Structure formats: C-alpha cells, structure tokens
Length: 356
Image 1 (spheres, rainbow, N blue to C red):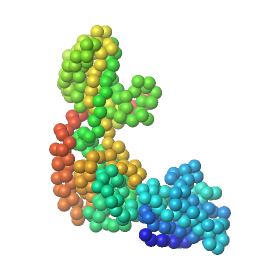
Image 2: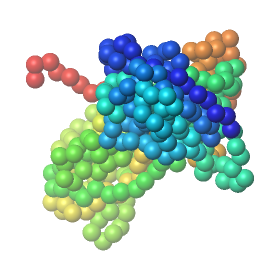
Image 3: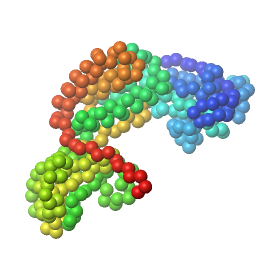
Image 4: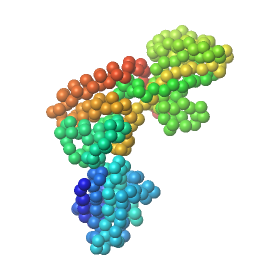
C-alpha cells in the first residue's frame, strides 16, 4: 500500500461553493480527489496560509460538520505551523468523502474512494460486488483506467439511466412482491405509489409498486377468481364503465409517481370488504454511493457491466460502440430469457395544466 502526501495551501479562489478562501491541493483549487482503499494520504498543512483552517472529512456534501468521518483519520499539530498535517488511512469500503474546513464553509470538495486490489479469500463474490466494481470494469472495457471524479459521476448517471431502460424493457422480475387491496363500494380506481415520498398524506398508501403483473378477485369465502388484464383501448371500448358487480377485468396506468389499477366491473355493496390480490414489480433501486451493492441478482451482473460499457463508449470511445452494443444486446437478451416474459404496461406522462 502506498503513502501519498498532498501539500495544502489556502488562498482566494472559486469552486462549486462560490468564491472566497479555498483549499488548494498541490496548487489546484479544491480539486476532486481519488483515494484508494488501503493507501495512506497525508495532507500537509505546514504552510502559514493554513492558519485557522482545520482540514477534516465528512460524509455529507457542502462541508457538513454534522456528519464527520473519523475512521483512520488522525491530526497532528496546528494548521499553519511546522509539522501540521491531517492523515487518513482509507478503510475498505469507505464511503464517498468530502474534505472541508471545520471553521469556514465552502473550502473543499469531494474525495472519491476507490476499491483497492486485495483479494477477499472467499467465494461469495456476489455479496461483495459493488457499484465501483461495475464502473471500473466497464471503463476498462473501453480502454480507460484510473478514472477521475467526473468520470465516476457520469458512469453512475449512465448506470441509473440504463436501469430505467431495463424497466421499460421489462427486465426487473427479480423484484416481485404480492399484496392485496380491500374493495370499497363504488370505487373502481385504486392507487399504489412508487416511493414513500409520494402519497405521504395517504394513510392507506401502498408503496414500491412499478407495475401490476397479475391479479385475482377473492370473495368472502376466500375463493380466488383470476382477473383479465386489458389495455387502454379495450378499457375505453367498454360500454358502461360504471356497472357494478364482481370485477372480472383490470386496466393499469403507470405514472411518474404512482400506479393506478382500474377495475371493471366497479365493486358494489356485495363486493365491499372483499380483496384484489395482485403480484407487482418493484422498481430497480438507483445506483447511489459507489460502495452500494448493485440491486440485481449475481447472474445479471454481466448484462449490467456490458450495458454500462456500451453507454460509456458513446461518451468516451466511439470507435468501440458497435462491438460493445452487440455484446450488450446479447447479454440483455440472455437476461430477458432468464428473467421470464416482459411486463405489459402503458406509461402515462405527468400532465401539467397552466393556470389551474
């Protein structure tokens, strides 16, 4: 493992937080840093310009002292005097960090933590496979090593966009759950929300639903009758949507923040209290921090890696786009076969009416 020393000075400058006194690392104003697990980094604050500027680490952006990070961190001396320094030995799976001044805001930037090269001595590869591993592998496939802070950010963004593509193609069947809706007399539309931040005022809200795969009607005698899933055109063609009785069909609309299931027939007083039992698809989780584990089964990791390499090639290696696209499509088709049949859905955009 290596030991790297950074010379820290303070001077007026401009970074993402504005203009004022900033930390300069080896002469560069508030650069994003890449810190490799296992390495030791010494931030030398001997220069007199560091006086009153105590360099520390946080797990929150914008130099938040409310989330200090102290694992492997030691301080020596007083900033601005000989021998003053802050040292960090980067722990395994350390989160993305931010270096900042404990006294003055807006002086630092991001310190991305990069996986080290040690082996785990285990065979549980899938349980320790992180977003950073996917990103590193994808960049290597387009011929880039030692990626920068921007390259890490754009890769994570591409990964989240690819997850949305997978959802549109129906590739997320490992995220399946089941639940039930209690029927209300005269109510034909029932709403499920995609996250807890949506529909927070609804005391009976159901969360985490992205699409309804299949549903059945269960009466008071616990007898289940399968319902037929229909599309928008078929539903629109129904002559009397207000007819009441035992539901036989359902129509699903997917919005940005919610999913609505519309029943036909509309439950009447005889069906009130009965239930609709359904299987639903949950949304793929975003790629958050680089130390997050990927929200996919181990067998789909090749598809995710190939897809990210293709997405990154469109930005950084256009000469490799065609080859990587073919590899990605091959892995994606294999994953779709493994995953089962695709979902059937109708996506409705959020509508905005000015002045209302």
